[in-house]
Every structure is written in C-alpha cells, then in structure tokens.
Length: 59
Image 1 (cartoon, rainbow, N blue to C red):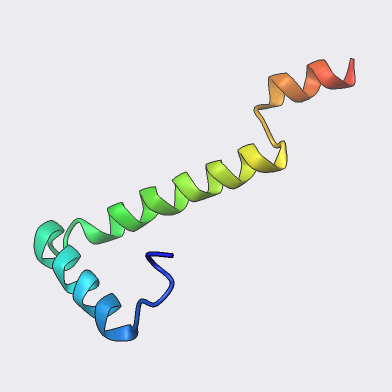
Image 2 (image 1 turned 90 degrees about the vertical axis):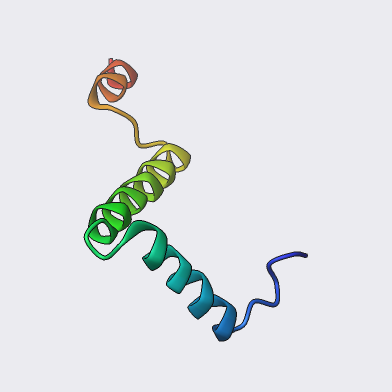
C-alpha cells in the first residue's frame, strides 16, 4: 500500500508545492472543479443520471 502511511508533514509539503505551482489566485477555482468532479463521480456511482434518463426509466 503506497499511500497508507502519509503523515501530516508530507501533506503540508504537498500543499505547499501545489500553492507554489498554481498560485493563490487559482486555488479556489481548482478546488471548486475538483469538488464538482468528485460530486459527478459519486452521482454516477449512485445511479443519479441526467433527467432524460430518469424519465425513460419511469415510462
């Protein structure tokens, strides 16, 4: 297991590198798009699709 033993120091280092690469101006947009991608992934796994598919299932 590669990522099983990441400590807080490694997390701080990774966040610092991300801050240096993307800059403080782009972090809100980056986190927003990451959250949206995770939400879409969860919806796809949960069976929540677009409304057109739900209408065809009801009919």
